[in-house]
Length: 261
View 1 (cartoon, helix red, strand yellow):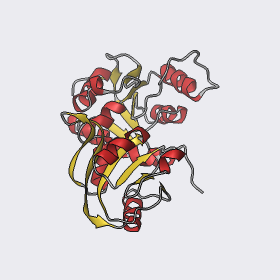
View 2 (cartoon, helix red, strand yellow):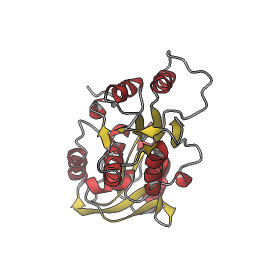
View 3 (cartoon, helix red, strand yellow):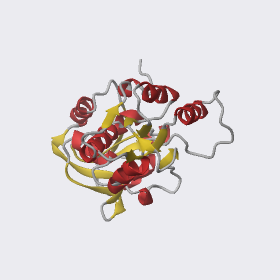
View 4 (cartoon, helix red, strand yellow):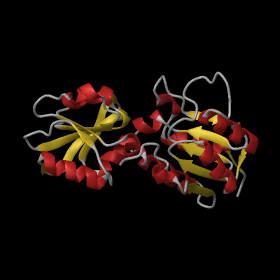
């Protein structure tokens, strides 16, 4: 097999989730490394932490692909006292490249929000806020109408949740559900406009839980709403490079920075 490079991995991901569709504030793409660097193995996770870099080095992987970018804003200093700085230092020292597919993977068909819709077996799924099939969030129909309590239990079961936060449960049946992985508070209005009785997302702020009759919002957690993208990227790379070392972090499901008690 010909030598795989960082650029080869990036091109495969970008054929699925083009960088051009990412949000203006985002920093998807290659953060550490050079496109021509050879790659002998890729390690996948949701977030790039110093511990993940250590895991990659220990497994002989010289490229990391995550959903969340390691560097969101310009770094004023690179210090081991800061988790981002420490991860950068460890990666550079070990020759590990770091790449992220963030809002570009949120916005494309079969991306983050589509994976959420699949968990709930929604039908007639369409983009919530976008055009030409590309955009943030999705909306679709439940397999059958459910009461508020039934849909709460259904969402907890399908996402394997210990807990969730919800606004006052609606008294009418829930048929249409809108979803957005990650911090989706800005799409609450779009969810209502799309006729949804329920909007499922994460990082919903306090005041957004004051909802009108017939509409409820549900916060299932940031990690929980987005973690499926790791499996999606894994499948994408394994299909393209069947004889190449692609692994998901052993610590993926324990890497959620939020703990529930």
